[in-house]
Figure 1 (tube, rainbow, N blue to C red):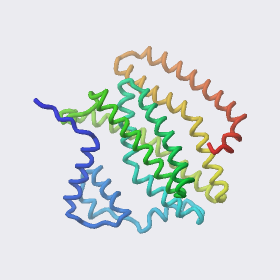
Figure 2: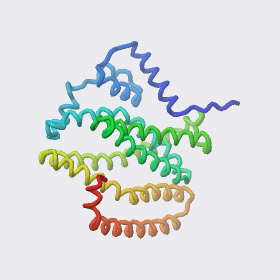
Figure 3: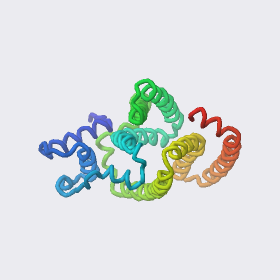
Length: 288
């Protein structure tokens, strides 16, 4: 029996080709078409092509609802559209990185992330300062950098970890596993949604304070994200560690590992607070 290896992007490309053919060349507005296709792809329900309704200028209305200042409204709109088109790239990276971490390889996802971050900085400088593309250039740089990390992840999996490449037989794993994955993803998705909703509410309040405040808040958020990386990395590592040991039936190893993670997190938080107290002003001036 010959096993056929099918890459995720090949499966998705073929899926969208099927959607295109099934819709018989029906025309949708430029902004609506990718959303419509994505909904059909996710639900496998072609009735959405007839039943799904979009409010006119939905994105513009959302930006106005957030009280986005008029002078940056167009830039915000361009950034959202470009980032939205690159959502599949972020999904692909998280999928590949999650698979590698699941088998205990947390080093290579970190390497790819570091390379992507460095490339993002270089492209930001080129697109914004060199080519004068402004906010749209920052969005394009982000999508390209993430795309490079996805390609590196896929090439690494194909070259070194072919066990992660699924065949057709692996798609039939039973309803219980699908339900377990769905129930876990719902709780994680709900948690992320609550955090995102809080960020939207906060952004509404900040937008009313003017463009200078928005710029300052954005810089501070970037600095906070940088200092938060060690804790996020440890949280991801803890998730993989607990899952593997729970499956292996080693609860005592889980307890020992979590005690060490708590201690590590506490030390990192104390060091981070001290560093921010003495160097935050310098970091912001340097454009971190």
